[in-house]
Amino acid sequence: MMSALDTRAAGRRSPGTPPATHPEPRAARRQSSWQRFKRDRFLLLLGLPGVLAVLLFHYIPLIGDIIAFKDYRPYLTIWESAWTGLSNFGVIFNGDPAFLNALKNTLIISLLQIVLVFPVPIGLALLLNSLLGERIKRFVQSILYLPHFMSWVIVVALFQQMLGNAGVYNTWAGSHGLPTLHIIGNTHLFYVLITSQVIWKDAGWSTIIFLAAISRVDLELLEAVAVDGGGRLRQLWHVTLPAIRSVIVLLLILKLGDVLTVGFEQIFLQQAPVGQQASEVLDTYVYNHGIVDGDWGAAAAVGLVKGLVGAALVLTANKVAHLFGERGVYASW
Image (cartoon, rainbow, N blue to C red; front, side, top):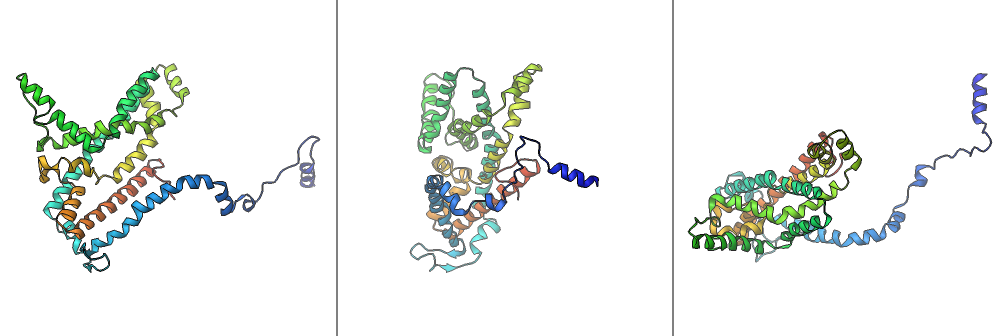
């Protein structure tokens, strides 16, 4: 009896109460593919050139990786070249000394760039964010961004003109009786030279992403830390860095994907003074043994394995990021 009265009372509406609205079925709310295409047609058209460029220069050339399994000859087509199976991968699995030397140099340079180069844009972004004057900040940013727009030919030429044996510094030091510096062509300082060039050229440009992430930090949290007596270091450690942690993790994952790619142009332009033993990396190994020496199959095999290792590192690092609660490059399924 009571349940019937309760049901009847629940069905009554007080005056002025709007009638209950029932949510639309999910199928009714879901738009068709054609409707979504019409809605987003302008965005899709804007993204079409980028998609075509990626397909044309990144995916279609993957067909050429088949020469890693063939005895490729340039005067024959890819399909007419003899099939050799996995014999071209012997330089990797059998431990070719030239390949192992290139792999060692690549890993050392990559480790230096991750440990020394990757944190520099973060520190620069934090320093730029602390500048009070907007004009000063823009002036400093313009100076830091400028080297990024120079090609590696210009950057290497500038370093040679400044630090070469007949460069500006050594010429000035010699004329004043000061000791000269042998940097360009010094095999012991080659890693230091490569790392410093990357920092000078790209560190300023990389601050753009971190500055954008810092701009989204909640100012109320910073004020709360300041009210509690926390200085700039505590605000940085407890508010700013946790707020941009996801961006740092994302860029670190992408950096790990390029761990075996350390810059062909930069190293190739400076390989002659120091020799291949000290400067050969996987990218220059592919060029020297594939195009110069004509061992196309082995060079393609090395490039294919390098790409597969990079993809595996991205997937592994992304999975580790999920374990620590970060989204990474993509969310877990």
